[in-house]
Image 1 (cartoon, rainbow, N blue to C red):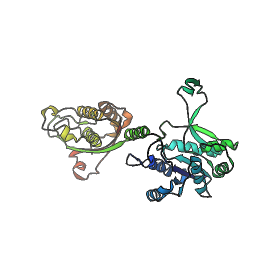
Image 2: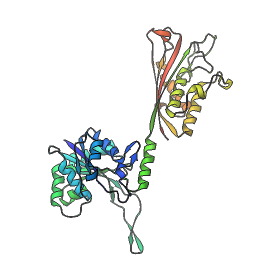
Image 3: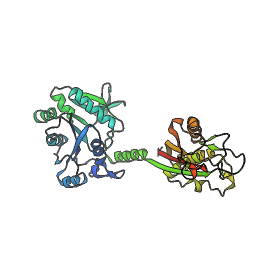
Length: 375
């Protein structure tokens, strides 16, 4: 099935007070969010734009890869008709999406497409959960919410079906499913998504911007290396656990290279400096301190700055000891120090195949990649 999606971006924004679709949101225009979501979906072969006449060149320049950019009408229905008419003749189905809804998820798009294949037309809807009342003069009466749905986009159906609806239905049709209903054709309502908000008023844009901030994800990289200590009996700590029978690493603290790499990755992701700044070896308080304390302090600083740890992936580079037999134990110890679930930590290991200082067994190095997200 060939699916073409269309973004309706021709509204006047009268309730918003300006062309809301051009408002910046997370580094790009509001309309671009839904355009990119649909364009990158594997089931969608192309995305077109329906815009106001005076904005056609602007949108065409911003989206040169668009399947088409055409002028819309004075009403949503007129713009929807323009979208269906402009869709390629070989398109089996057309998805119509309001450009003022920036966050259609991959799941939502997939569900609508699958339902079109089953029934011929589909749309997402959120079951109404709030108590409803209708104004009657100066009084109010309660309205049952049973069976009520708040409709969302993308909505769509077979291209020929939607065109027939536009060309033959004369009654009011606020969306594509209303046309299908008027034709007496079946359709399906799939579960909507609360995150699929519509920007109508300035406060809605503020909500969208808050959502973007909440989605912000960052990645940090950490690396640390320590030579083996010449001090007899020094314990080898790695990944928060002791490897008995192996000589320890040289350092001001317990020299846990893996824990240090993780701390550095987390601090870097959050823009909070590095381990040398936060735990300087010139400070007596850190002498022989367990690196689990470094991790706990780092996790605390991230939380204070509004970040949460999503995942940590690590690699230990060493000829000895053998790390992988104890990897799960290390993950548990590291996660405990950071206050996260063990499943959010990965420990891997490799050797240097005898090459360089690590390969000669002079020390141990570790690398870490940390992913964090706004809390």
